[in-house]
Length: 210
Length: 250
Image (cartoon, rainbow over all chains, first blue to last red; front, side):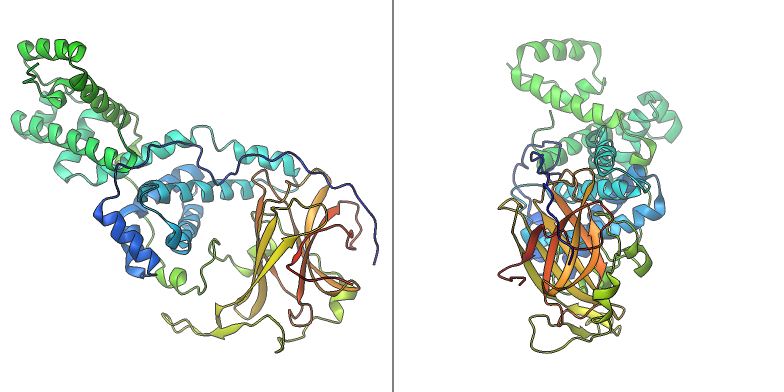
């Protein structure tokens, strides 16, 4: 066997990539559903994973499609994300992070892994690390947007639709009434209810939303 | 102070002029009202920042539950890729580099009893699909040589569609420096070693690679990770950084 000695380079430690770059307040208190799902994961109950997928699959997938800009790749990574949710489920603690936050943290990590792999060969390993890091700017804002998308999806359709007309299409309440044929008073009541409900959902998952 | 002003109506601009004036005053004078207004405006700001697909998310693919939950022993690993793609660069850029001389004597050797590697090949309990690995051997690798004391790895030996493979999950190794890489070996002793492939460690000090195993783990029961200079030599550098816990190469 050929032998020779080399001086192994030992660069200084860097922060662990697994740690989320964004900071969220801990959830106020895990709700009953999150606790039940966490218990289901600990018990290795596939129904818990199915329910988590029904709850968060669309949000994670939307985030992955946007981040990777490749639907096929997003489908592959989506599978990886929920495989990891299943494998790491027994360690999930709903008192430390809301379920959505936990799932999206995994999605973010796997998306970065995928983007890192996409760097064409041959490459300098240092370049690869730097390029993977390029995925980070804006990534937290993107995650924040997808969390918001999830909260909106939990609203009744009529409330979500009115908020969409107001905050995405930027219609006035009068214009919304003309567009939808819904009475102005009803529009106001639904929008107020939807806004309040959103605030409660955010507070439950992330803590105080400000 | 009595409020009589709904903060949500206030931020949504729904109040008539007299109540709007009261709301403006409350926002300056009532900390609780001001806080509620601030929180609701934050929610509104987040809605205004949403993109079209975030209002109407794409439908996700169906959950392949059997593939996930039927995969056997839990491991923090992404889903398996195709056989060809396993030869292509993955997270740790594995490259198959079988040493012909050393591999020749070992290739084709089947699993044997009496070693600490036991593969249980059986159908999935959920799908009944044949030839799937439902259990596999896990090997802990401990730091040696110049590796930091916290460095470690777990190797999971398994079989995928009849092909033996090892999935290595490495933690806390120094990132690969320019002109170096890490290499995975299976060894019987210091004279009989087979390279399974190479990988890089990124800034996160981790690597997760899946490599085909062309030799019998029974014949080559020791796993070793070396730090290699990119000098074209196919031999082990003699600088091992991880090895099967408690094993010695002599």
